[in-house]
Length: 146
Image (cartoon, rainbow, N blue to C red):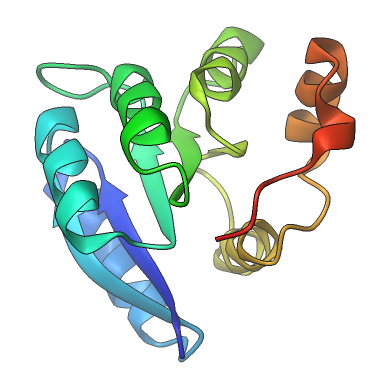
């Protein structure tokens, strides 16, 4: 059974591109795409995807706020922060809101697939996520499996 994904980004080009690319990989199934944080929260509550790929800058509530809401309402769904921003504050904000990791939008297809598989299988978070979780003192708790 493929890993179910919901992708949230205010750019329809990014949404269509990642949906198209991930659609070629039988390990993944994009079950929905959303252009706002509010819609993402609603759809996660309805669809219960395994992983949400969440942009930071969204109209209405931010991706970070949506991540916090999803983490509270549907804790079994894992959120991957996804942004063009390279500043550590964005990654830290996503992790603090409940995301399991953070990746930049310039990521390769291979790295995205590896990250999604790692998250789904509760393996050690990526370097940045690992560093941030260690700083928060919660790294030893790991990622909760669905």
